[in-house]
Image (cartoon, rainbow, N blue to C red; front, side):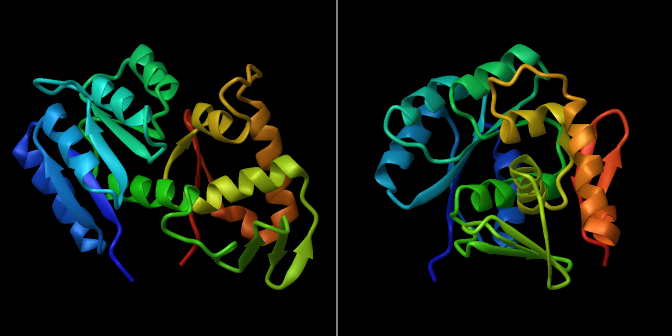
Length: 226
């Protein structure tokens, strides 16, 4: 099976090397670009790129312009990197169709986890419709869940929530991010609605409910106990 190819775009060569080394360690193939114009040229010359990691602040053409250009022709997953922690920038990213938005400095291990999660969500990493994690078995097509081989009944949103947790295993998820992905971006309810659903989900999962860890002041992380 061919390796999944990722385009890493950043004008800082040290940053590109850092990200590249971690991705190659996880058996991804990496191509690099040092500015926006080079990124566009490489993207359209390589039809087998599966994901783009894109820095915002770059010479010649910034990340937003590159994202707009790619989005005219492709729905390929895009992870945006930025040195600024600005809500307006993050909202702009989502409006342009960015799949993830990561603020520098970041942990390379977390970036790789986000890459794997995005690829699973977009079916580029795991094509099997049955997901398994720590005794949990989810049949995505049939919308069925088994815990240690025993079927449990979940509402539609509970299933979607558990699915989002499983494909993002090990990634810290804010309530806002969960709302955006499980309840869609146009949902304007109280983010605390997630807490209610998580409580019900944990209860139905019994001892496996402890896999859903609370991150105080932020949200949740799904982590299978070793």
